[in-house]
Amino acid sequence: MEAGIVGLPNVGKSTLFNALTLSKAAQSENYPFCTIEPNEGIVSVPDQRLDRITKYIVPQKLIPATLKLVDIAGIVKGASEGEGLGNKFLSHIREVDAILQVVRCFEDPDVTHVAGSVDPLADIDTIETELMLADLQSLENALGKAQRTARSGDKEAKLRVTVIEKCSEHLNEGKPLRLLNLNEAESAAISSFGLLTAKPILFVANVDETDLDGKNPLVDKVRQHADKVGADVACVCAKLEAEIAELDEEDREEMLTDVGLAEPALNQIARAAYHTLGLQSYFTAGEKEVRAWPVPIGATAPQAAGVIHSDFERGFIRAEVYSLADLEEHGGEKEIRQAGKLRVEGKSYVMQDGDICHFLFNV
Image (tube, rainbow, N blue to C red; front, side, top):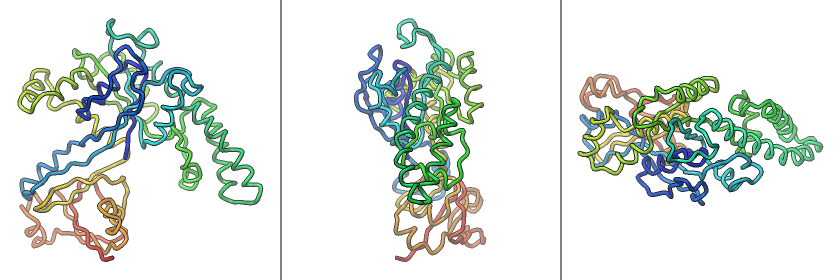
């Protein structure tokens, strides 16, 4: 699963990306278009449950779940019509599963704001408008072909025409597609279009070092907007996090203590992005490795097995499942089994967040 980091130029996107991935993406500073190609990186999703499991099952390796992040160059007003670097970057967003929009929530006379003043709601509106205009263009381009195919009596094409018109009407009312309720068949009819405003979104408020909890009025405005659109908000001082990320473990802990943080704010962003993507984790645990596996909320046991390998899903027989609470109560798998707490689940079992599993399969 991928998440794309978007925002206006000079809001701290690349600084945040660098800190999250410990990479060295080109930072824009006062040069809005220096990130020419989208930078990509892999970020771990911190999960304390992994450490709790390893107290009882000691592995050779500990592997957290990961997410792929894409840092996309700053979008400006008019991008959908080719302004700035235009549709080139909108096309990069089409490939991601969720959007992380960084909004600047601090004043700094030394860092130029592309719009001339700091207004996170105006920034959000600018980017949302460009994404909606791009979606309208995509739908308009697809409508003619769908209508021609529908005239032949093709049922799928007829449905596609109906959904395209429904989405276009919604967008013309100034509403992103993530706020439009579509049933499974309707969503499938337009799934290949890569519509930008249909993707879930997480707002990342980039705050000043003196406001790490995000208590200033600018962040409040972002939270109020997020509540209206059903999105989450994560606060981060990208500049501080970039400094923390460069330190070794001992110095990092000392700096976190000095600034009053229990953990890097980046950890919260990774978990929030995971939630925005609609993911949860299940675990496999053995002597070789203890590992977290990302799986969509609502996935069945065979689908979860397929995350490990497609053969596991194809030849799924059953899953043996227990919980972390069971492990902490009984101290080991053998004891869990003896206590009758090891559950045997079939193909219809819906995975629960934190399940610890063994899959049995035959191909």
